[in-house]
Image 1 (cartoon, one colour):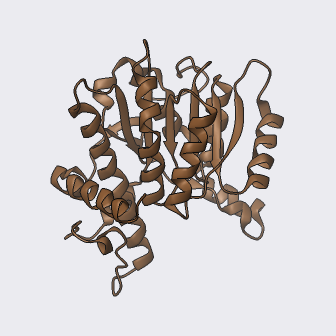
Image 2 (image 1 turned 180 degrees about the vertical axis):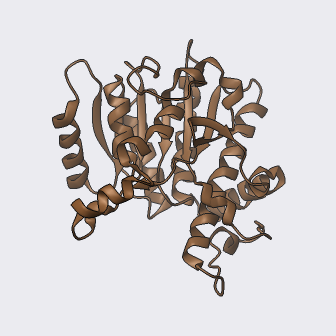
Amino acid sequence: MKSTFDPQNDLTELRGKVIIVNGRGTGLATVGHLARAGATVYMAARNEGKALQAIEKLNHEGLQPGNGKVKWLKLDLSDPREAKRAAQTFMEKEKRLDVLVNNAGVYLSPFVFTRTLIPLLTSTATEVNSDVRIVNLASIAHRFTPSGVKFSEIEDLNVQYRGKIMPGFMRYAHSKLLDILWTRSLQKHFNSVSPPIPIVAMSIHPGGVDTFSHDWPLPWFWKPIFALAINDAEHGSYTSVFAAAAKVVRDEREKYCGAYLDNKPVGRIAVPSMTARDDQLADDLWSLTTSLLKDLDI
């Protein structure tokens, strides 16, 4: 693999491809890179006004004729029922889905959104020369999840870590662990059916990304300081863009099935924590999640 990643030269041909990107942070930059490569990209977000403003910003900054298009898809991830409804609405609009990038910070609603879209992803994957991918944003922070993780009851999906040092960070780490385990289960599902479904599922660590200094007082002062240690959103999106559309993933797809990628260098296949590699734990998470959704009639 190359030591540097250039989204202008290292992506597959995306004209005619349809992609969904949800979530904030590096999501907007990811949308821009994929659209400039020719794809029709749906920016899945709750607030229409903010989404259309972001799309206008992308158009102003460099989506020229011949590039792809960016569209808004209403997606409210605060409620898994709304996530399911958004996926159903998308399937009424489009007859294919080549790439799904789950950039959001929650677990259950992206699970529902993805599960609802799997029939469309699968039908696209059966086409000749297909290159269908699911990308789930995780984090190296998953390594800080305390030991003893289990998935036997609903509370295990949202452990509060009361009494722990930095409980908020522990909850974040736990949520990123869920994303990696879920990705492993997705890939296992695709590989185990007969015939196997040719979809590549990957989880990624994007690296440290500055998506907040512009909201601080004196942003002109803070931004160059943060730039010494962490990426801006443009470069922070590179690992997501790599997973979504890099040529090397298409050419060496078996190597990337179920993989966890990090950003040093961009797209490097890394080894997650031992807990994140526990297939029984991944199975338990899948079973608990599907059982909960059945009880909720979702």
